Image (cartoon, rainbow over all chains, first blue to last red; front, side):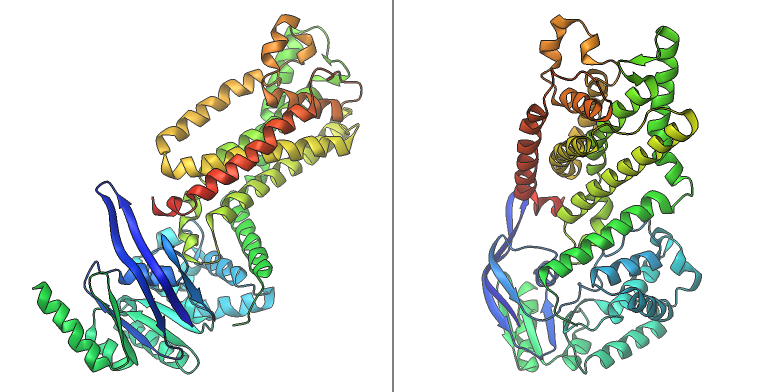
Length: 223
Length: 261
């Protein structure tokens, strides 16, 4: 369960506070795949980061039960002077795996990420595609109840993309996701509900067609 | 995924960060362990050689020069290294805060503990080297008190370290100032000469410095018969514990802001 209670979020800038959300309250239904739509700057990423526990509301609180992945597709998540293997071990340790399980997961991550020799080189030598592959492979090594995904379609080449889509599809048997994407069609196809971010307000639609219509209104109004 | 208790998660994070710190400290080049011991050793050797040349005796009170300088430098480093290395503890782990379990607090604390551990390891190695190869009296006379002094110096360094960690990301222009401040401290904290060997009229000024109390007390714990009755462990504690408290409060007040900048 994910519930936001009276969440206010702003960033302090040189021009005063820039509000992203004001007194936002909603509850996301369980066992539902949720697509998040919104214009640039409407706070999609901020919302995902707050649900992911790596950013904080200035007021209000967010209640979560169940395990939640780190936000996939965002920057961060690696210490770049360490190798891919060391970063992967770090994550396994954070998630409390024992030595045996770590070996298993490392083997999986090496195989899935297709990094080969690069797995033992510092992450700072990676291309951005390789880094995303590593991050994606790491998240696939664990079974979260909810995956937070930000524009995952940007990962790797077409073949790796297909493979990651398939992996996500397999995960869906026991996991759900909250996904941000600008690819509206894909998002509609895979999601059960839509969360549409307007300007400061957020609406949840259990009917995706209705949600899409509302989103198009927002886009039109913007034009 | 299994539900874990808060303490289990915290333990896992400490463990993961400690290994990550050791990897970057010692993993990159084989000489890492050598440097950890060599840096204080170089100070000790240079100072010992210098003082042997300019002074007729071979030590202060019951302590030969190498033992005298080693006790001073290593206990000084417990404070100084923590203050200096904490500055980067947030920046160096920024990517890892992408995992919800890992917080800047953990990174600062673990880096401090690792630094402290390395210094303890160095002390053991140097004491062994000195006793084995040079037949120096390197064993502590009162090991429990020595540990107590180190623990208080550690909390002092950690408290200031929490402040420098925040300054390191939010007020970078001040970070250089802290490093510069460390240099005069090296000269007025009693590394070179025992307080008792300095002219009496300056004592009243020098004794303001809590680190001088720490170093002298550490020596009196390590070296039997070392005169340290002018300094007090309590005075060091009166500085250290509030420093730790204030450091934690200052960090707490800025714990979210450090992630934004």
